[in-house]
Each structure stands twice: as C-alpha cells, then as structure tokens.
Length: 370
Image (cartoon, rainbow, N blue to C red):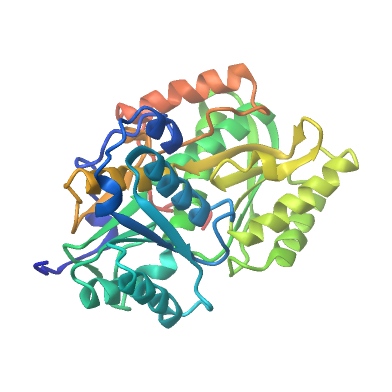
C-alpha cells in the first residue's frame, strides 16, 4: 500500500463528511437490517487488541467488540481479540504481530494509549489496515501522523457532556454538582467542559439551580485506581454533592460503588455514567440504579461503520472521522429510567438545536472550571 504520511494538529483535522449515517441505531440493530455479504468472511479478518481490561470492560474494549460482533453477524467476517500481557507499546505490538502472522487484515485498537503503537504498526505492516478509537496515531510527541492504512475515530465529548449536564440539572432542579476525571486528557477535559456548559444552560434557560463549586471538580490522575474513586466520591458526597459525573475509567467504578452503597442506606446520590450506558452498573436494588444518565459515545456504531466500509471496498484510510451530535454519534442512552418525560423532552429539543447549529458547545475550557 502506498504510504503517504499526513501531519497536523489533532483537533483541527477532524473529518465528518465521509461517515456512514449513524442515526440513533446501535451497531446490533444495524447488523439485523443489513443483508449479509457472503464473500466477506474469506476476505476480511478483524482483530481487536484490547486496552486495559478485556471485552467486558463496559467501555472502549466492549464497545469496539460489540461493533465487531455486529459486523460478523451482518457480513460474515472472522473475528478474534487478543489481550496484551502488559500495558507497554511493545506488549501491544506483539499482539499486532500475532494478528499479522495469522492473516488478519484489519486490526482495531481502542483507546488513547494506542497512539504511538498504531503509528509504529501502520509503518511496519503497510498491507494491514488499522482502526484506532478515540486517538490519532502519533510519533510520541503528539504530532498526528496518519498513514493511508489507518483511520482514526474521534468523538465530540463536549456535546455528550453538555447533554448529560443539562439532563442532570433539569432532573434534580437544584443542588450541587461534582466531577471526577481520571487523567486530564483532551477527551476527559472536553467531557468536563461540556458538562459544565450543560448545567449553565439549564440554569440560565430553565430556572434550575444546580451549582458548581470548583473544589468539587477534581482529577484523580489515573484511570485505574478504583479505591481512590470511591474515596474521592465519598468525600464529595459528604460535602453535599448530589450528582457526580465520572469520566475516569476504572476510577469511575469506585464512584459507582460508593454511590450504590450510600443509596442502599437511603441516601439520594447520583452518578452520571460515561462512554457507554452504565445504568446496569449502578443497580443497587431491584429496579433502582444510581446512574442518572450517561454521556455516551457510540463506539460500537462507529467501529461497525468503518468495518462496513471496509467490506464494501471503501476503507477511509488516512482520515480522522469525528462522531458527534450532527451525525448522531454521541448523546444519552435511548432509555433513561431515572429521567422524567419532561426532562427528556427538553433534552431532545436541545439536541435538535445543537444538531442544526443553533446551540454551539465549546470544546475549550475558557471561563470554566479546569
């Protein structure tokens, strides 16, 4: 494959026009309505190199695997996942080599930690195609370097965060909001900034009074420390915080655990989930969950879409594809048991205003709690 590296700055090079329409349909529903391509199985073998955790992590690994599984059902592709022995680039590259040796011609890597890994792999294996989710291949200095055999899937997290903040303020009407981030990556920051803007929008336009004390917006510093997530969220709830948006990977599992334990004792505390619908993770008794709603990325849909294009012979190599409200690539879950019909009606109305450009959510933190 002809290699033509393209350099630039990450956030200024997003491309949305090449996307297959997402709608609100998830990857499984798309697969059920797609005519199976009988010739695809012998032509396309899709491998997933997992990030931290496995395919049941309720996050990037699981979302990517669900998209791959839906593509298997729709097109008859062959699929497999491999979990690296460690968390280094060398560990991930070893599994990519294993896929390459086994004849896998499309490899999916979900998560920001794979940026340098895919940069190296796209050059080492020019006849293999790569999908990197939520990151762009880079040379180690965060300089984007896309090759023609790689496609990057990105999301406008600030739009999903905005909708979640709006919903939280509308539903609670008053109280105190908090935020726990993992590492201060671009994606986590955008979630935080969108969340704040959504709360502000509700307060200014719908008479809500969900306040934001800067001391209640914190970053733990990792995506792995479950115990720290529980400890920090306990401290925030003790201060009177009513709802915490946690964009923190496994740290967020600690937040959900703390909220669930308190809810079992009768406390009214809430969590806003992240990346996927985390409602089930927050169930603490029959029919009750501490997950108010979730700021979602349609990871399975995005992965499925690119595989579909590959099957059809139009792999969008060399491009950054951005999923956002405009192409229904981010949003809240289709079902939100803890949100009222009135709340959802307003959320859906505002969603439409973001989609048509009437409301513009900033992807910067100017004037916001950082």
